[in-house]
Amino acid sequence: MNAEHSALKQIPLQFGKFQQIEFETFLTETKTELLELIRKIASGEETQHLYLWGATATGKSHLLQAACKLAGQAQRQVAYIPLEQIHEFKPEMLHDLGMLNLVCVDSLECVSESIEWQQTLVWLYNELRDNGHSMIIAGNASSANIDLSIEDLRSRLNWGLVFQLDIPSDEQKIVILKQLAKKSGFEFPDEVAQYLIQRVERDLHSLVKILNRIDEYSLAEKRKITVPLVRKMLESSL
Image (cartoon, rainbow, N blue to C red; front, side, top):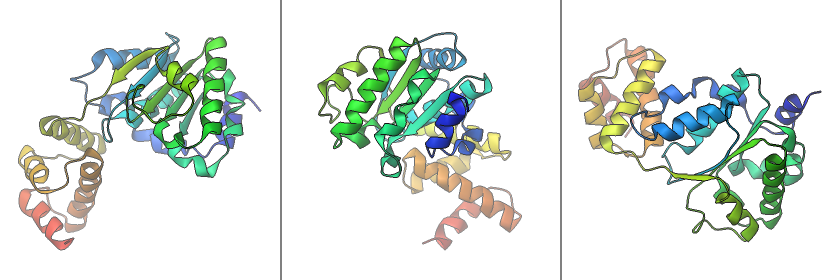
């Protein structure tokens, strides 16, 4: 069994969900330098270690998963490690990953209470770097402020490049929603997007869930997506 299949078998990554996660559905008006760099890392044009940080719903997981998808399409060996799932597997399961071309580690803050996990991540970082491979880590705070006990891990975050991702504005969220709707094959009119932004929770994760509900609701009702349709849907869910 090759290293790629070994990594995918050992860690519950659910790669199937990456099918709709692409760089094209990330807001391209900002961070173009970062997007291009991650594309090059994923495709093997560059070897680099990155630390991406920002609040919830700033696109960190999106970028990591898009990188994994692109790397897989390029026949490179890759693993995505969602640390919010650490209760499902042990840190020893990372010991075979140092030979992979790219390892993406998501939600670093989830190991703040585990010295064992932090030490294992330092080891993995060192091995990937020694092997000339790449690593992308994402967390919810800067390297100075993220809650870590192992200073060696904190220092590793600054060895490579560091990028902060900002919370998108309402206008940017509308662009993202329209991009996602187009990708899924339906139109999401501007007036409906404005109506939605003004009346529901504005974090992007919640908005994307509601967007999917609107698509399903319009199909069930056999009606176009309009403000009255969305109003009816929202009122029926109260």
